[in-house]
Structures are given as structure tokens and as C-alpha cells.
Image 1 (cartoon, rainbow, N blue to C red):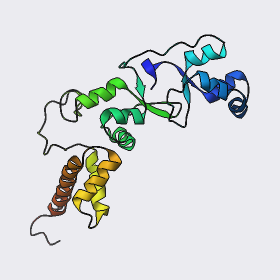
Image 2: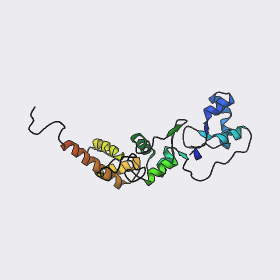
Image 3: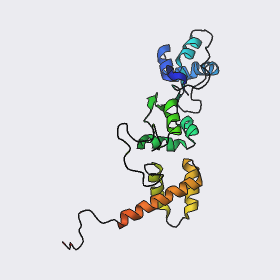
Image 4: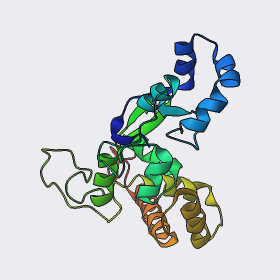
Length: 215
């Protein structure tokens, strides 16, 4: 997490400031540096550090503590966002692509989201009040056809059904819950809605073809 959207720096920029190649910096300076300054995303392959802490260490000064507690301006990566939403990191990335979640920003190649955006999505699921998926100024509009209308997980469920062959639906739901997060029961409902949507599309009349029109 990047607390309060504070300025950060990565190891390539640290090496550039030291005037040495990144390989030299990592071999010569990184071991001692990493002992004193913790990466903000310790499980990421891209290591970034709080800028104030990094500069304090390099200048031989006491390393300032990071702000404590949670703040709306905290920036969270996909793993941290997934933990808050109760889904898998891959689902967070899918949400961002499908518009269910904001696109976020990229900091040194790491996609991050403000905590306020995540909590708003958590407290206001799609179609349920502020931040719930309806663009501002659109009015109330028609009622949803079902509880999961507009849920991006329906696309995942439909794709799973297309490749499921004879897999029992419960087993398929269990696998989706394990892969993307959420409960097996929720995925069973999503699979049911996705299957019904497929059936409706198969049985709906083709646009432009009138009854009795034989060409």
C-alpha cells in the first residue's frame, strides 16, 4: 500500500540518482538499503519505496515512520484490493477492464486504486445507490431484469458454460469460486442467469426476419 498517495521511488531511479547502473546498485547498495527501508508492496516483483524514507536513509538521517491507520487516499494494488472486496486479484483486474471498478492508476508499472474507490464499490454494489453502476444524471431507468444484471462475472460464467461440456454445475461453480473468489452458491446463481441468457438469445427471433417471410 502507498499510504496517503505519498511520493514513491523505485530501484532504477535510486540507481540513476546514485549515478550507477541498476545492476551495480542492486549488487552493491540494495542489500543494505532493503534492510532499512521496506518496500511498500513486499510481495510484488517491482519494488517501490516511500520517497521520504528512501532519501532519509541515503542521507544518513533517521527514517521517518509511515502514516498509521487507513486513509481514503491510500493506494492499493490488486492483491490488497482483492482482499477488501473478497475476490481474487484476477477478478479485480477484470472488474477494472469491464468498468465495474475504476481503471485505477499505474505507479511504476503497478496498478493501484484509491481506498475510497474500493470502499465505495464495496458499500454500493452495482445498481444499489451511489457508485452503484448507473452513470450520474441518467435517472432511475428500468428495473433490473435480475439481481445480477450488469455484473461482469456473468461474462465469466457464460464463458465457463461454453467450455464446461458435461461438468456438473455445482462442480463448475466450486471451481469458479476458488479461482475468482465469492461463494459457490453465488456462482451457481451466476451460472443459472448466464445459461438463461444464452437460451433467450437462441430462441429470440432474428432481427429483420418477419413471420412468413421466406425470402
